[in-house]
Image (cartoon, rainbow, N blue to C red; front, side, top):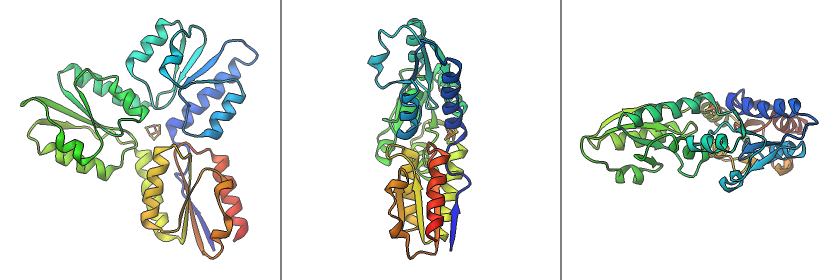
Length: 286
Ligand code: F3S
């Protein structure tokens, strides 16, 4: 009887840094009236966000909430934001703490530079994801988001146009490769920058290899976290008995009664204490 916990389960470097930034700021401004905001929930994890709100952090959930806000510190989360949002915050006189993940920041810089050189930017990713919205906001007007093979087939710009392709950091590498292949066949002068983050690749590869070996697999993460969703899909393909849970409460331990090995992994925004709680309770039943 064995429980295998993925080494890569839980917070990635960028998320850890953003979460720590908020708690450090809360410590620094303890007892002061100065409000602390995060621009959007700092991570896709309700438990963590609720804890921060209890300690006084206010979450700005829409762009409209930023309008008219003229006092306080706004922390930008790891996903990053469009360039115009920095300007708006500065114009309002807000203090900015930038916790954009350095890997995302790098994409902003690439996109801005390539765009200024006249290239059409293609972002491979989910158009509704805040990271993609942020990257988009560093390109000029010539930018297209490609998520599916149909989007790639439809893609068209004027002949001779130079095209620069980047990726959302959490995009699946195989899907990225397939989309790049479709786009490359169109005859444009294409430069491809694989900006998928290693943390995601490593977490996905480790999850797949554990899921292939175990009888049941547990994937822990918030229902709204796209990287946890992807992790779940990968594990489910390799192991039919895969469970997607947010916390221990969602897990019916009786379901695991007859299995011999259980694997555990977790999305990039799952706190360690939640993973540990699941791990120790699964151990108890074995
Ligand atoms: Fe950054 Fe990679 Fe995490 S881009 S936020 S370290 S998944």
